[in-house]
Image (cartoon, rainbow over all chains, first blue to last red; front, side):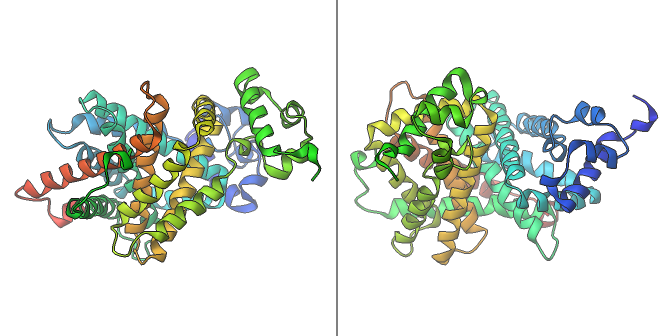
Amino acid sequence: MGRWEDNAVGRLQEAALELYSAPGYDKVTVAEISEHAGLTRRTFFRYFSDKREVLFFGAEKLEAFVAEGVLAAPPGTPALEVVATALAAVTRRSDEDPAFADFARRRHALIRTYAELRERELGKLAALAAAAAAALQRRGVADPAASLAAEAGVAAFKVGFERWIDDPRRRRLGHHVHEAMRGLGALALEQVATRSNQKPGPTPRGRR
Amino acid sequence: MGRWEDNAVGRLQEAALELYSAPGYDKVTVAEISEHAGLTRRTFFRYFSDKREVLFFGAEKLEAFVAEGVLAAPPGTPALEVVATALAAVTRRSDEDPAFADFARRRHALIRTYAELRERELGKLAALAAAAAAALQRRGVADPAASLAAEAGVAAFKVGFERWIDDPRRRRLGHHVHEAMRGLGALALEQVATRSNQKPGPTPRGRR
């Protein structure tokens, strides 16, 4: 790789963010992004399989990072707490990097605008949940508990992330994700409390 | 609409399911699906905007049905219970229709095989969660609680649905979704119990 390809990923991402905002994601070709970044189409496809992937670079690394976090939790930690802690580590990383917040906000504005990007984002979140669930299983958590903890944890992360994007007070991502995890626990408690107060519970038949 | 278009949606869905299985989703055109169903491309596009949508017909109706269920819950019902009940109504509907189970299994096998279909499915589930969250807000549940209850409820539904697809004992969808909702509550309780047992809790600063 020649020097002229230095930081190719960053340059292509920046070019894509600019051109996807104007003239627009659906109006831009890979050739135009590459040219805007001073690189070739061939270089683009060395790093990204399509026009969407340029906004999702590093998703596999993130999955591995979260899986490692899940595996590193002390034995006996409840499954949902394991997932919450692993996802909190993601927010710490990003809260320490001011450039990340800027990139994430610009990227998320595009994701909200284009259904194709939204679907890809959901696919990445589902893969993240699957990676967390697989790591929980390696810890000995059986299914469906492993999948439930992973999916619910990622769902809370998603809600916290959206709150962070929209927060006019610009509190940290870690704050919003933590609040979302706490909120999920509170909702579950409230539900369980009500169910156990109901006298003649629904019959097993009615439930099945 | 002439008589020859009777049950056009069902015929196009059946044709798509057959051809997407073999020769395969990525090898088939809308023209071929339409021809296989004895209909025209024009008829196809009257009902579906693209090759994927033919497998997701009725998603908007499902969103409206769940939103109605959310709005119909007795006042004071906890948010997560409201969502669980509305989603349980979906499973009852489908458990009463044997043709649905067959269609759902064949459809899901395709969704698991093709990333494009998986992403569209995730988009539909996200739209379902958004509809449930909006209905919760109309009930007076503030955000982030409304979004959290909706996203976590749909996450549990998704896990229950997958378990149903894979169940060698072929228990009903309602059973698996109910078990998933219960499992989510149990996980949250376990987490809350552990957190409240921790003596020197993390400082607010460390948490933010």
